[in-house]
Image (cartoon, rainbow, N blue to C red; front, side):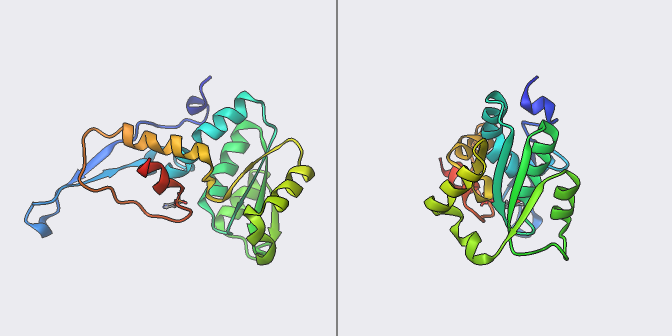
Length: 187
Ligand SMILES: *Cc1c(COP(=O)(O)O)cnc(C)c1O
């Protein structure tokens, strides 16, 4: 079974066109409704994880580790995918939210995620090569995915947003955090 089928991913997402009356009907806005890809896996998070998860399933990966803040949509989406795919998930979270769970962290615990709270100094090392090697030694069978799901393969997944578009546009506007989505759109 295809991964998109297994996770009930609804792509291609639709494009909704709005002609705002506050600019004399001179501008047309189109919204790529990636928010409708899935009720839990938010749109751009799926795009970024698509090929990495496909590879993880093909290689029968049993454990995934990733990083994020206490309100991370990336950890939330990835935790849900791992739960559905029977992959153990470890979330390394910046700050101690154990007495103050966010909705995302509550869901992750419900999905049997191993949530590990680290202080800001430790979290800062998330791209540090020695720290990554140490984690890989600690979890020898785990696939490590960087913060935001913004690994190299994410770019390929994000380009699908563009290839699904029905026409050429003058501008593309996107919110930015880790920059993975932006980088994929530029690619
Ligand atoms: C994650 C997220 C972003 C940021 O995406 P990046 O690829 O990390 O820049 C923007 N908007 C929403 C709704 C998100 O969930």
